[in-house]
Length: 237
Length: 321
Ligand SMILES: Nc1ncnc2c1ncn2[C@@H]1O[C@H](COP(=O)(O)OP(=O)(O)O)[C@@H](O)[C@H]1O
Ligand SMILES: [Mg+2]
Image (cartoon, rainbow over all chains, first blue to last red; front, side, top):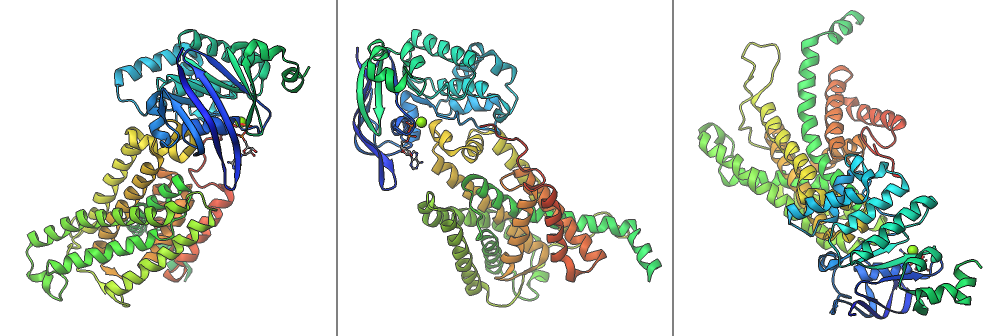
């Protein structure tokens, strides 16, 4: 399989401080890769660097062979790289439908966009019911669904999800993870960031452990699930 | 004393007349307020220079009228209607472009490098730009109030012997401001760029993740806000017929107040705020006295903010986190 995303020795940070010191990671086409780590480890910073929102200070980020580390965020989406960010970041005063339309901002194939909106509604029927409502009025779970559906509207080749289970009721988390599995079965490559390490490693093919801005472990997901260090630090056993 | 006051208070014609005056100047205030509110909505900057941008627009309008030979005493009587209409048309094209370009340039040169700096840095810079603009205005039209050619006949459109007066000047203000507000609403609500503007205002990071070039959107916002101030300045000059390098201060302050009153960042709110302030101004002047106008306007602002801290139309949707 070919790598769709290759991060090599990425360094990035805020002000004088580096949040990422040396992050290297690969996502193969068709894979779900989980990135787990404690709060503040640098998971969100990694995704934001890939999306071009946080500028890489050193290292390279290659997406389908092209170095995107220096591209502005709005050009990266166009290449087929979308993100459902931590905390959902729904546009609160745009309607559900408008939120979805914003996800397709880089596209101009109106019929394709309309078809994809119907697909999103089929995936999450509650969004269809609430299509005219302001995004800010949705419940947390509905906002998460909207955030994923909105990211999919870009027709990405790689979907990045930042803590999709954060703050959601257990049965909603199950529903979200089912969607992640289904998307992957349909061929989507996914980079999944989670603090819920157990759930993430169960759906993922491979996983990376991030600690204070460095990758400290990487292995097949089922191996990480039984690794004593992972079990002690992230699975609460 | 009392019966006279009583009679005056219930003079319906007078009240209606004050409402026409108030709504007319309110529409003008609203046009300036839109520039404040749009910029605040998108970069959370109170652009103190906006009122002075409006003032510079009037200066350019005067220069254009001078170039058409309409500014000299007595020139209007001998000028043909075609010349006058050409001068107005020229102003309505050139001044908005000038103000839009100037506003956009100031953003690019001054505010953009401070985008991630603490809030106070761009704010203080905006005050600085305001002073620079005022100095340019002082240099341009001089320290005194300057007459702006009174080219629009003050003929009553409701008939020469009607009790109420709605003049060609009122019509000019309404005829320019209302279509602009409608166009702005359509632009922001339905076009792709307009939606990108709202998205950027609501969550800039998410907007970038959607593939929106937020710097371009911010630049466009400064262009649009500047253009509206430009239109406003031409209409103001034609309506009030006096301009001065200081006119940006009070008009800017009223417009900013209108934006806050309506709910800063909210476009219909700015229009509503402008109309309310125009009405309060006109009614306060007529029934209480011109000396008190500013005090009354701000008293109304304070009272409304006490009951609705985020303005009349502000924060209609609570954000769930
Ligand atoms: N906007 C920011 N400004 C300054 N420091 C930040 C910012 N965002 C994150 N950090 C810091 O960067 C480090 C990594 O944070 P983050 O990438 O959010 O970690 P995670 O997503 O794994 O919880 C943390 O030490 C955090 O405090
Ligand atoms: Mg995070």
